[in-house]
Length: 124
Image (cartoon, rainbow, N blue to C red):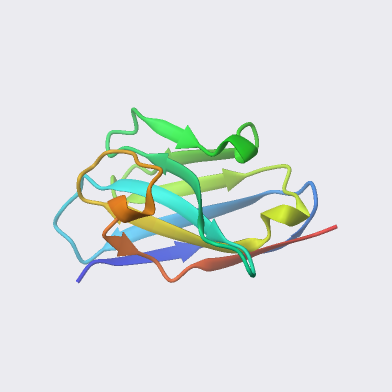
């Protein structure tokens, strides 16, 4: 059974940084595309960033460009989200997702497997 585990969430003051990690386990597949999404209280889940299985294609949501960076680990089934210059409006539960198709996608329906989410809280 495929499992995704996110780590690295927490509380930080505005202007600070956090690095989220996501690891896929329980699968012999090693060509997952990875995505990050977030859901703030009372809002729908939204796209944050995605990276293809090769790492050659990356996309970051416009509102986070220049502040958030997505990357892959040395092992293919890991991904990171570096978040800098955090703002209170970045407060949300952040979810990692994996797509066996291997293609970077901004769409939630492209992903078959999801993590449980990790809380990020940014105080002003």
